Length: 336
Image 1 (cartoon, helix red, strand yellow):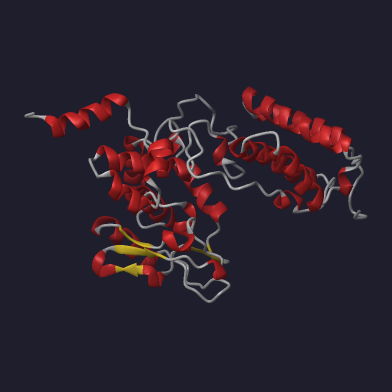
Image 2: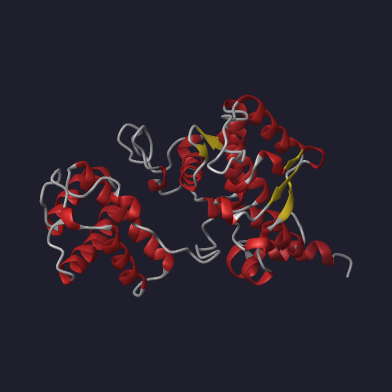
């Protein structure tokens, strides 16, 4: 235990955190946090952890394993988000070591496990891209949103792109599995492929490289497309960009009648994912796949382009409504 920490029991810490949170979050968020953290304090009690100062990364790994046996991976990911927030707050009041929240590792969620109803709709995607085109042209945010929507690629694939992977003559990007240098692809070598971006969006990428890209290399000497001052962009930074750009108030008025001055999802200390109407990178992927299908792109082509099997595509990504599917079939059946 560090001499810099102040003793606090898990129950005392959770009660203080919830009291701190209650005025600033929606009622549903508060009660979800309360339920998750009560489960955490119960686990601490069962394992004779009576001082938050003593919590370690190993303890947190054991808690994650304990919860994994009881809930689905997607639920566990949401639960662990609340645990991370609690530990971050606890570090600020010197109840746990700094950075302990970063040792809470969630399991990988199965491909497509979110509800098929959760997707970025085409009209919203177009408004976001129109806004970025007008006010933040060729910014890193513009490139992130344009590539994700246009290609439907996974976050990990986007993060993996190097400058050498761009093919200007073909307006395309090559995705390569490079686990040895920290950019693996979901399906390993089977995920490697050329992805057509098109001249319009490729020009956005080209302008970003010329004007706004931070010139740097990553820890392995590679030249990433998407960079920060520290090197290759992290998955968390991409995710936060998506959450922020997909907030309705990014391009229009808030549909939840929230005050921007007090909303937890906007501002300098914001957590964009807390906006009820924002969307994740996975929701963009689902929206892009559904959009391709609605444009009559054959499912086999979509499968190859988006690196998803037909079975998984139909089960988890095809969010077309029954009447939309019927209308598409009708186009092919006219004259019969």
